[in-house]
Length: 231
Image (tube, rainbow, N blue to C red; front, side, top):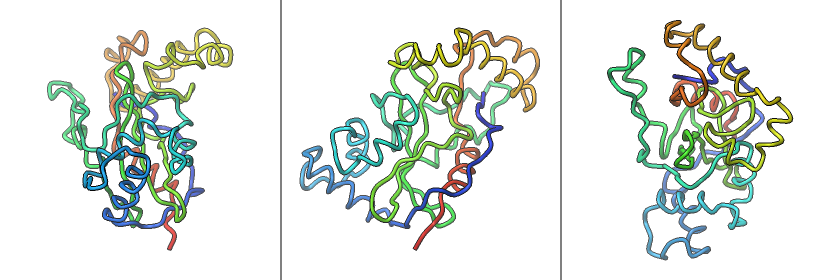
């Protein structure tokens, strides 16, 4: 089931400068070597980036990335750059589409001239959240698109993380003790307006009943609306 498909997109506000995959790799490996995350002869920048994202708070070179990715409460116990997570839906699902198994937005990408590295992260107890790493001309930056992404937009947290989050009490205070019930109502209304049957929607009782899937078209639309290419 998709979530966050009806959000209003933010236009521009972020700027990215084009970098080749080789240039990304060189910058990432340099940070890894300087912080003893990888050996000096390491060539696998994706694995190095995975470890850097996991411990990003420790590396001053990633201070902007840390700030950017902290806007959503999500654990970085697991980070996927290469398609190791299971994003695949069951082909017996009546809403199954071949697009649901498309993980082409992971790893190095060039979309409308904007280059970035796509990934996903989350704890074992969470739905993975999609993010990107890009170069703004001075620093590596991070961005978590909203449209089509799998997190609780009301609480700005990955599904599954709320009770484990330090912000749980403040979230309850802000949204009320039944904020999850309100979210479920929103989900039901949204899904009915999309393509899901009333029988399926009526079966949703809480967020544990919903398996959310990243909508790749949605996150791509968000990225290209939010980030502007600079020279």
